[in-house]
Length: 361
Image (cartoon, rainbow, N blue to C red; front, top):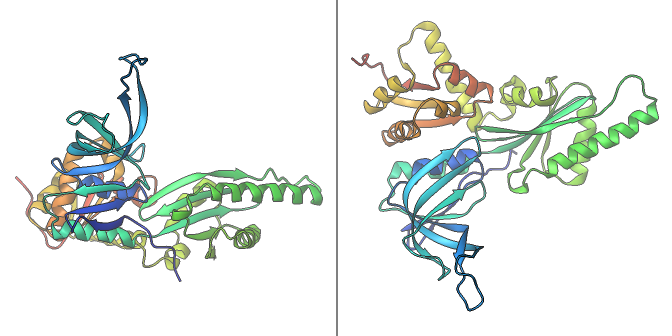
């Protein structure tokens, strides 16, 4: 048993000259951002204003239509706040004859957007990275007590909090009033669960004090919202805070020991241990990590997404790609999670090294 496997859907096309890629979460978008390079060809559906010429049509008027375009990439940007990547380039092909070739266009790639990608080459480390994203897993997290419930989705290393539902219960209502409020409470939680796209709605993990979670678990199973509903024992925090803290709890960690999130937890514990005993197989900060990556010394690179506010995006992409090209692993952590906050507190970039390296001069 386990949560549903998801991640970057990948299929070869055009005699293995191209790839069909479908990101399923924001971490997959980060993976695509590091894969798509200037000079590549990217095709996807988009909307574009086209000029309609005719006897009764004003020449300066146009209308926006849905078209499929292929562009030669000139730039790629990752917008972590909006959860998208923007690919800009010149149009080289389209399924609509009214779209002029050679004009510029930007494609916005969001989760569940299909794109086709053609590159001059596909290095082994790049394919390994893309295929590795297929091993990520998702869990819906619900942290509930009789007063409030927080709902979130943990996809790989990314946590999205969908919101909090309040029951309106207090100690002053009659029993029949409490039951009516509880029915409304559970109904609102179920409505929030249904807003999570079914392709990403895997295992549902419910934690919190008391027996409210048991009743909710039964309702979710009866409604068929998930084939796997798990009650988390020994976890007593509800609401938004409960969702954010749940992935780092001991009971949750035991439940998902093989997930990417648990693997990064192990890496951070190793890093903390190294720092505590003065082991020099740790690099802190972008400059030190970049120096170690050039030496081929990085075993695992941990980045907080908050680093994009302080460091140029191309620098971060180059650091992550060089790490993986030389046999290391690179992870981007959601700074709203405990793991991401830990890395951000250490400068936003931390590397575990294969061996100690001299201090750069």
